Length: 215
Length: 404
Image: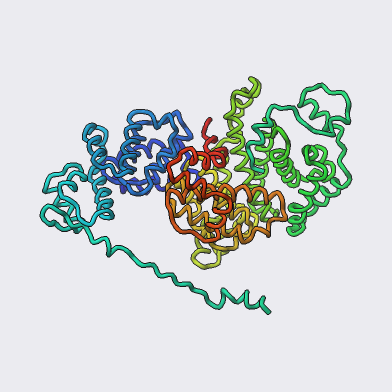
C-alpha cells in the first residue's frame, strides 16, 4: 500500500501543490501507512509538518508524533532535526512530543542504555511504529561499528536493548562480526584509516589566461 | 540596506526631515501630516525630471547597458544628492513626465518603495507596506500572465535585487506584524482585514510561478549535464528576463525556506545548482554570496557542519579575493560586508563544533579579527558566547517570521 501511495503523494509535493491544505488528509493517511508497513518517506512527512506550520488549526499531535518517531528510525541522518525545526516551542513541549524529544536527545548522545530503559517503560509510545526497535538497533550497530574494535558481549546485548543470546547472534552475523568467547570482535579500526592523496590537476586551459596576460 | 534594527529604533518616532522641515514654518506636530505637507511643496529638480524621462525611454527601448548605468550609477547618485532623507517623488508627480507609461511606473514604484524601506527613518508605514505589496502583484501579474513573453529587459543586478527585495519585504512585514504592542487599534484592524497582504502562500506562489514559467529547473539540469540549456527553455525561458527571474527565484526560495525553518527544502531547491562553480548564472556577486550564506546556514542548522564549513570558507575566500571589485559600489558593499561578518561568526561556531583544517587565509582572518578568542570560549562550553555569536547577527532576521 505504501508503494502504491508513493506515486500519488509525489505529485502532491511538486511546486506550489506542496502547500495545498486539501492534500493534508491523504498525506496524513500516508503517515499512518508508513507506521504500519515500516515504510518511510521523509519528504512527504516534512510536507505534513509544513502544512501544520502554515495552518496551525489543523495541527494533529498524533500524526506529528508518528512522524517524529519515524524520523528517529533514520538516525544517524538528520531527519529528526529537520522535523524538529518545523515545530514551534509550544508544540515541542506538549505530551508526548516532549518525550520523543528526550528520546532523540539521548539517542544523539548514544546513551543507549538510558534510551532502552525509557522505551521499555512506555511501550505504548513506540508500539505503533512497525520495526521501530530494530531500526534503532541498526543505528546502535552503526555506532558500535565505528567505535569498538572488540566489545564485551554482555555490554553489546545491553546496547542493543537487553536482547537475548539468539538475537545477539543474529545481529553479530548480520554485521559480519566474530564471536570470541566473552568478546565480540567488531573490526580492526586501524585498517579503516585511509591516507589522503591530494592531487592537483592543473591543465593548460587553467593557466592559459595567466600566461597570456604575462606578455 | 537590510538592517531590521533601523525600523525598530526609528518606529513611532517623529519624522526628521532636517532642513526640509524648517523651510515651511508652522507645523501641526503630527508626523504624517507634516509628511504630506512636505511632499506637496517639494518641487522636483530639473535634473531628476530629465533622469526619469531618459530612464523611461531606456526601459521602453530595452537599452540594457544604459539601464545598467542608470540603475547602478545615476539612481544611487541622485538618491544621495536629493533624496538622502526623503522619499523619491510621488507616483502622481512622476506620471506626468513619463506619459503615464504603465510598465515604467511599476518599476519606478518598486524603486521608490525600496528606497523608503532602506533609507527613510521610521521605515515604511503600514500603508506603504501594503502599496509596495500591491505594486509587486502588478509587476508579477504583468510578467506572468501574458500569453507571450513581455518585451522587457532589465540588467541582471536589478532582477536579482528585485527578487531579493521581495522576499526581504515579506520578512520585514512579518517582523513588523509581530510587534503588536506598539500598534494602534486602527492599525491592528487594518492588519486583520488585509490578511492576504504579504501572505506567505502568496510569496511562495510568486516564486514558484517564476520558476515554472522559466523552466529554470530543467534548464539547470540540462546545463549541469553539459548540454545547451536553450533546448528545454521553452518560449519564456529563452528570454533572459524570465530565465534570470527564474534563477533568482530559486535563491529567493532558498532564503524563504530558511526563514521558515524548512532546511531540507532550502537545500533541495538548489539541487541542480553548483554553488561553488562559475556558470552563466553567476554574474551577480551579491547573489552568489547570498546563496552561499543561506546554504551554509541551512547546513549548519541541519548539523551538517562539514558541509557548512566547506560552503562558508569557499565563499569567504571568494570575497577575500574579489573584494576590491565591489568596493566602489557602496550600497552593495555594505550589504556584502555585513553578510561576510555574519558568515565569519557562523564559521567560527561550526569550527568549534566540528574542528577541521580550513584554508590558511581564512584562518588568518579569523585570527586577525579576534574570532579565536570567541572560539576559545565556546570550546570551553560557554553557552553565552554561542548565543552571542548566533543571536546578535542571525536571529534578528530569522525566526521572528514565524511569530504570528
